[in-house]
Amino acid sequence: MLQARHALLAEGWRRDVRVHLAGGVIAAIECDVPPGRGDEVVEVLLPGMPNVHSHAFQRGMAGQTEVRGDTPDSFWTWREAMYRYALTMSPDDTQAIAAELYAEMLEAGFTRIGEFHYLHHDRDGRPYADVGEMAARICAAAAETGIGLTLLPAFYAHSNFGGAPPAAGQRRFINDLDTFAALVARCRYHAARIEGAVVGVAPHSLRAVTPDELSVLVTLEPRSPLHIHAAEQIKEVDDCLAWSSRRPVQWLLDNAPVDARWCLIHATHMTVAETEALARTGAVVGLCPVTEANLGDGIFNGAVFAAAGGRIGIGSDSNILIAIPDELRQLETTQRLRDHARNVLAIAGGSTGRALYERALAGGTQALGAPDPQLCVGAPADLVSLSLAAPQFAGRRAEEILDTWIFTGARAVDGVWVGGKRRVTGGRHHDRDAIERRFRTAMAKLAGA
Image (cartoon, rainbow, N blue to C red; front, side):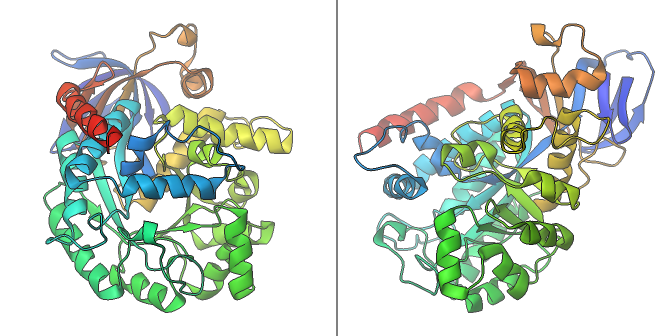
């Protein structure tokens, strides 16, 4: 049993909440009751946050691309550095880095990861004996850390619009439709060993797939999540216009069955008409505000999308920083800078922090094909407790807790449960020492590669 002084339930904040856990789900909830004998008492209890978009291997290069070259840096120069880094990694390295990352995600309050996985093959581009070898390492890292997993194997076949041949630096990513179908089957096999795991499909982008290939990919796992990068960079939009006379999101809306199973990652550069039309489909936009800022992508049109009823999730993408408050704060503050306004994504009369958290919770859960995200009876026991020990929380009412956590930088995550199993205590993953040792060994090896 858990006893929370404050809990964010489906109907809102309640005090003195007793949560009964059984079989990995919330079996019962009592409000306004004292702790029972043997209850674990926490100060604040929240539903765990899904992370809709991650490239796990990129955590290993975080902090290594913050040096300016001889020419102006951009997303495209960063991408070349990422390609070079991807060519250095073994399966063991990938698993060590993913496990470290997933432990950090749990310590941050993320309870499920959407792993947009495109590092498939050996360094020379040849498939491993098990075409799903690298996916198996992602699954192993998720199983070891205990994070919920939505595995999104990415189809990557071309270097640019119109079916351009892939570049040499992309060789570890490349599949045709037949080898990709075999890869997805192996992903299902490996993910089946993890309770609650979901396998979807991720056409990498309109740059990397042709229209004919996309039409096949959409039917490959017809009831599972489908994720695609879209309109992240202005050059991508310009290249798409040159190829098709349409912008990327408009092309998808006109030519693909975009609906609630879809998650468009970034969708940064959309017209107002595109933004409103995408919102009407019920698709989720997977926003990665920290990465989008780091790579100079641009600012998502959040105010228009929210006003049209659009659904969002948050992800950590390149994994340069793992923090729920930073992603949500970056999302809101960029809207403020652009619109010269405050509390842009709040609901009238309501907390901005709560609005951001609940929108990302609902949209992220939808995008990852996970069960009910709310703290209610029958929902999975994916829970996060916050400590109010940081001085920033002094004198705060329940309605101000999320605003304080998100906007002041207060350190707060204390405990994390996934499927009713506690994985984090005192802000530290239970297997932190062993996971960190393997990560340090892998990083030392890669530094000398």
